[in-house]
Amino acid sequence: MSSILSIAVSGLAAASERLQDSASNVANAESDGPTSASGSPAGATPQTQYPPAYTPKQVRQFATPGGGTKALTTDVQPATVLASEPNAPYADQNGEVAKPNVDFASEAYQQLTARYDFVMNAYVARVYSRMMKSLVDINT
Picture 1 (tube, helix red, strand yellow):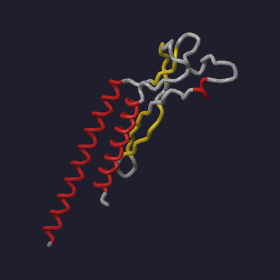
Picture 2 (picture 1 turned 45 degrees about the vertical axis):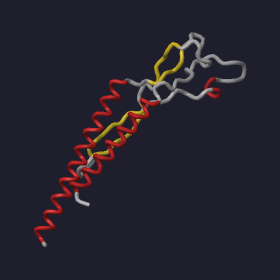
Picture 3 (picture 1 turned 90 degrees about the horizontal axis):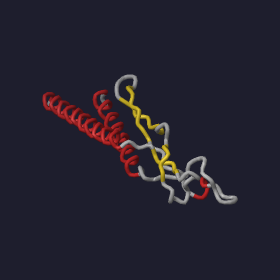
Picture 4 (picture 1 turned 180 degrees about the vertical axis):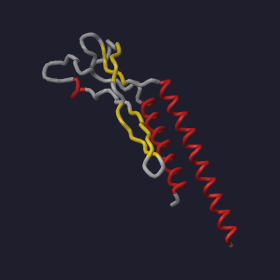
């Protein structure tokens, strides 16, 4: 595979990962859970009784030696923020729960960025394919 095509394919993969992580963040934005300091009934801890809050992901994209790009998925820091939900069975003594730290404006930006990255890298691959076809036609 040529370096031009491998660069475009790496960009397609990175855009796909960015979109997948962002979509997962949006889908799980309301998946809250107990705080680490939640009170618990005798003998049971909220961490074992209820699932933890969703941990949002973020993509760090960087250039690779020789061309191309690589996407590295990491956890958002801080992963959760406190939210008031006094009726939640896993709320702490103050009525707070751990809510995923998802910023919808940032997620919309990430999804648009992934879309444009994907389209541009697909265009590069298509132009490369046409160029190679033209070279084969010239040589025959």
